[in-house]
Each structure stands twice: as structure tokens, then as C-alpha cells.
Figure 1 (cartoon, rainbow, N blue to C red):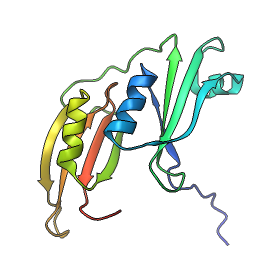
Figure 2 (cartoon, helix red, strand yellow; figure 1 turned 180 degrees about the horizontal axis):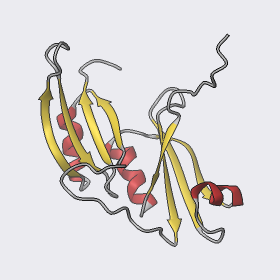
Figure 3 (spheres, one colour; figure 1 turned 60 degrees about the vertical axis):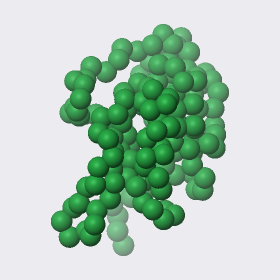
Length: 159
């Protein structure tokens, strides 16, 4: 018997956003996370403690998901007064920074939709070939409205 505690696959990521409505539009319309798992205002003091914000902070949130099981969801949290922004160098990655990695069936269509929404493109779609993995895949990176790095990988069939 294995006595090592187990950890599940990723349930969701939590993003702290400056404008919940703008970020919600980006993830719903831009990336297709149309289903709302949960949303509203967090008032429980434990939520404030978990986020490390003062008890008198206002916390609005929305958790969105793609169709299917409740895994890989994106939770967006808007805290007022706003905490300080993360300081990062532009044009590349930074130590401690996260990156959402998502699959798409049409990288160019998603890229165009994101550009129309004001996304910062870090790297246009390019073919990445990893030794021994065949022809490779089209990949790109961009940033969401608050600077979260997103890596899109094209997979032409259903995933």
C-alpha cells in the first residue's frame, strides 16, 4: 500500500485581475471558456485569509471552464483596493511567472480573435519541432489583459 499522500490533476488556476469584466470577456470570448462554474462576491473571512488580503477588501470572482469535466478551470479574482501589480520585464518570461498552456484546433483564428481583443502577442504562431516527436506543432504565446502568459498549441483534431 502506498502511504504517500496523493494530489489530483489541476482543478483550476487562480488569476488576480484588475478588471473582472474585461478578463471574463477575454477568457470567454477570446479563448472559449464559456461555462461559468461559479461567481459572485466572496465575503467569508477565510477567503480573505487564503488570498492574504485585508478583511475589508471587496473580492469579486468568476470561475470559467471549457465544456466537460470540472478540471482545468480558470478562476479570476478582482480585489479592491487593488493589490500591487507584479513587476516583470516585458518581451519574455520572468522567474516565478506562470504560463497557461492551452490546446486549440485553429491557432490562427484564435490569434486573430485575441488580437482584436487587445492581447499582446509575444510570439506569433511558429512550428515547434521537438526531436523524436514527428512534424511538430504550431505554437504561439500571448498575454492576457493583466499580463498572464498564455501558450497556445494547435492540435488539428478533437482533444
